[in-house]
Image 1: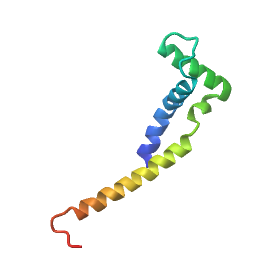
Image 2: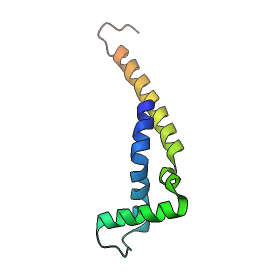
Image 3: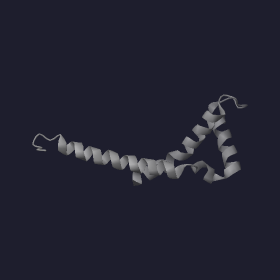
Image 4: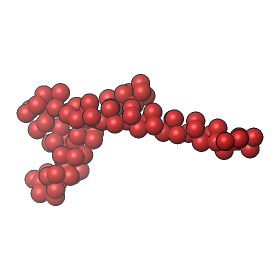
Amino acid sequence: FSAALAASLLTQPLDTIKTRLQVKGGASKVSSKSAMVVSVFKELTASSGLSGMYQGLLPRVTHMGVWGSILSAAFEYLKVVSRKDYNA
């Protein structure tokens, strides 16, 4: 779960910017892609502050934690079931 939290904290700002760029579409006054990223970052921090970069963090961490737990449990179960000496 801590790995999911660390990954989310590091990548959430980039995902927020990516989503804003996708929503805006191609209509932009800025010419280069890097300038578009900087432009969205400035707009977002001006309207919501730095906390705006982490909008949606709780659902993302929750989803990653639950999914990781289910995946680990399924892996362990299948590891036991797939052994040659397993008797059901």
